[in-house]
Image (tube, rainbow, N blue to C red):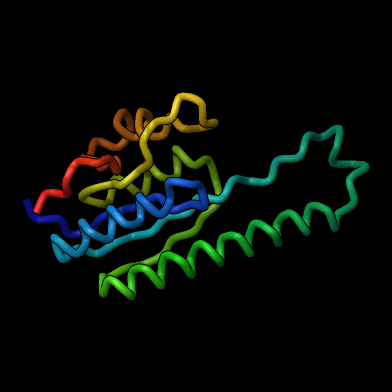
Length: 146
């Protein structure tokens, strides 16, 4: 099976480097194009808090999120260039599962983190399986097919 496009969900959690490493290895093995996707959560402020909240606090939160995204992008690009893999970066705002599913539909394989019962929001592999209709790869100790 030829893989042309591989999507990896990139973020700054503790398992992010393992996902990226797996995606890079797959991209190298199949000479595929690697797409890094970071989905930023929308800043939601309850209406009862919004009125008394100074605008600079919301702006500072947005700026911190952009700085974090820029650092994650640098890490992704440096790793992809070092591995000499064709790549592109996508960063968007929204609900992670929904946005990731839309992007995943246009790729051959999706690399996501495994499910951790104690971690908040770790059910993305389950949701991806049910919503994208594509193969996916979860980094484990299993060897990468060559």
